[in-house]
Amino acid sequence: MSWLALNVVGVVLETLDRQPLPPAPAGSHIDVKLDAKLSRSYSVVGHAGSPARYEIAIAKDAQSRGGSRHIHEKLRVGDELQISEPRNLFALSDAQSPSVLVAGGIGITPVWAMVQALESQGRPWRLYYAARSQTHAAYLDDIAGLASRSSVGQLVTHFDDQHGGAPLDMAALVAAAPQEAHLYCCGPQAMLAAFERETAARPAAQVHLERFNAAQTENSGAFKLLLNRSGLELTVPHGRSILDILLENGINAQYGCMQGACGLCETPVLAGEPEHLDTLLSPEVKQANRTMLICCSRSKTPTLTLDA
Image (cartoon, rainbow, N blue to C red):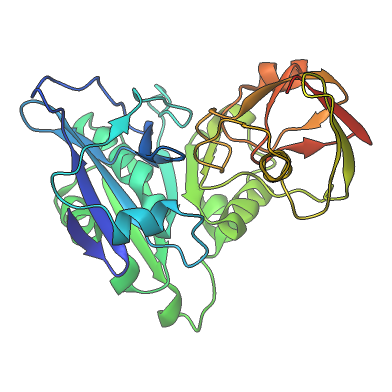
């Protein structure tokens, strides 16, 4: 473990038996089980060494629901953890066109892996890296060093404290991107909302993003929840998740990340239409409406029936 920036710690993971870990292409994430009922998903920043090791980076979140606080306050060198195999929902395109990458804060973790992959392949890239200040910017020295040596890449930084608190000009950077470019973004909700808005006219296949947390919703009203196996009829109010209500009522539901990313709380849907807010299920699975992640997703219909 090492400090990468203010309130950001890096953790290197390797197998107990020194066997190689599975490949983790740029953009991959792993689920890390921190204790019996606490799991979180983290991007793999890199994998190197012999055997391969994974590196993850975790920012301490003031609004932490347990994950970042556990790592910063309890995790120690030598502790044993269970992790999943890598999954990649934020993969680099194989296209040889330029890549424009936007990272905000700890969103640099998958993007830094992408930059290294692009550089190793000699593919053109431009990285916009935004953070509250230089002291909050993990991997900044490494990224700046790579950019200074690169013949295909460029780094543009934006630190809020140097711009009167103003955010990165998303409209300008998107307008400056070549039409054939693939655009990638990982960062806080406000940055992702700006990215989606400014790239709306671009071909969907050339626009890629990854969220830290489940998407936000305007449909936050209460709805009725019917549980088929337990026979309960419950109400899920504004500001509460289905998972919260199940646990409060003694339903032993499985869960992990509580952010719509790990899939441990996936539950079959028997009736009603879920409002899918997770970052894990594929568009095809969401459209079928036969299953949902109850830690974050809600209901579009007044009543939702689950196999629980």
